[in-house]
Length: 259
Image (tube, rainbow, N blue to C red; front, side, top):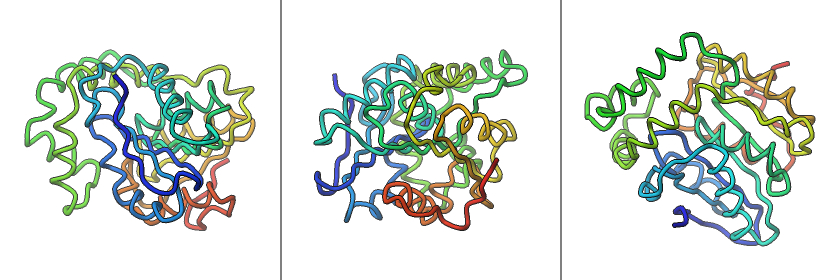
């Protein structure tokens, strides 16, 4: 079964694929879709185990990257697109940029960690314990607060989160703990922008330099005053960043270059 893809905008316009985080769906890109539709061809997949693709089991980041590449080849006339991913979507976008650069004009990867976690066994146990209660109202509200989800978006967030399969949540959480960039990144011509919110976890912030260095055309920046899910905290800045990368303009001055 193919994954669900929301598709809006002129098919002849520059193509942008937006990849969502774990425990949510393409819903998280609502503000970016609204802002980009007039002059871009926007594709928003629900990844396996999430949203309207929740009956397809999650297999791996690599398999999901292959599915996204298939979407690009099937729905974009030239078979190439800009790819933007946050959190889980960032991991998928990074793998795609490394292993299938023919399908990726450029990638933005936000909220990705490539460094070893301390006590990974404890974190895996926590993920296993969380899976049975992940759709419980108090847990969803706590997650929304941790992600700084705006009050106006809480209902949409909870609805999207409840569509996530527990199998996907468990497997994604486990896989992300050991994620490393594919070795093909060293030979990929794909321009990659690694981004993190200034208030992100230290490991994610420190990963920026490693991600940028792994790709010959990599660079990194911080988004000030925001955390992990910053496309909702500062949607205008996130959208401006996407637009700048698609059009080849300079990045917004508010972003802080990291070297």
